[in-house]
Image (cartoon, rainbow, N blue to C red; front, side, top):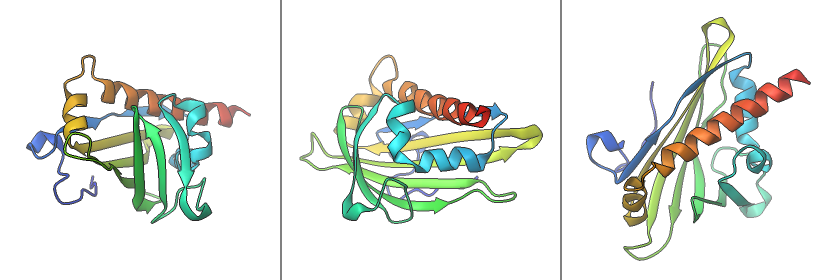
Length: 173
């Protein structure tokens, strides 16, 4: 599996970032295409993820994410500016991929840079794998790394579980 990482945003395990989150679930009964469509639609994010608010698009580009979209939102108490840097919808035998570069402006104590990448793929026997990863740099990221419990991984796990529940419920209708 390939994830797009900007220079300097190599995952935490290699020691280049200040915080790294990786979550995964495998869900039966839904498709990668359905999951991806619900992920791209930011208008429904707050309905399944409590840790997001105030999604705003520049130039009326939203609420559906697309390549090079520039937007902002609040999450984990931070106002994050973001730009889509990778978007490939899932297709036969290929996973869906979505990534954005996000940042919060500020001095050395407040500047935050993240790369958040999603991989959504159909698995054998009618299952879907949802795998988001986030690499972060900056003092706020160092502070998040030191939280106990692990705020970032817990929050992202809630996000993917809420996304899966939303898709499962829409498939029942």
